[in-house]
Image (cartoon, rainbow, N blue to C red):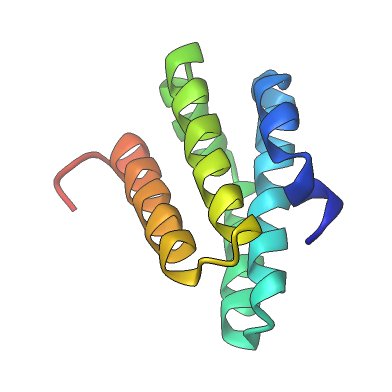
Length: 111
């Protein structure tokens, strides 16, 4: 398990918006790399590029607040706990729930 994943709960809760975005990108990249799935790693690389675009930054600035930050940290902790416990189904479900939550926050419920 990468150092970033091991430090997830502490790092998440101690970060402000700019640091959180950088840390979050790295954490999700660590998850993708840990799968050893080249397709998932490639998709993750595309998402990292998308996150660097101005439109992503605008979406994040409009949606990010302390309450949401806390929710994201809790979701990350659930993912990391499942990985630590070597529970692939729980990890998959926690990641899916987190990604659906982020999608709803950034793009709305209409998708």
